[in-house]
Length: 129
Image (tube, rainbow, N blue to C red; front, side, top):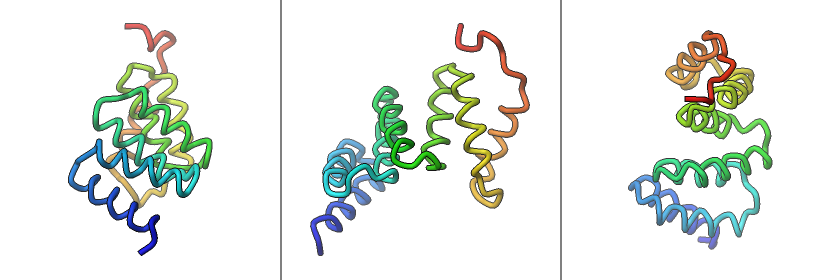
């Protein structure tokens, strides 16, 4: 088994066991082997999100979009992060882009949320408590 494959297996195992610190370590190592891979960057963002580290989650999700500006899962994660942070205008931008790419047969729950979110008129000062 190649080093890349071994690291992928270790990362997947750590992620499935919700051992996010170990998954982050393995995914970081994998990133060194594969470069700016949008899937690896997205998983790193997701691990940080699940550890309540929004700053790192945002940074890795943005890097994933730099690697592939059509990476649907990163768009959805950015939409969720911005929504949870009360940054609704930013969330709206990512939701709109994700909806344009979304396959109607996938992730019905997210699609229903996104459509409902976009149906609400934007507030002019939504980012202010």
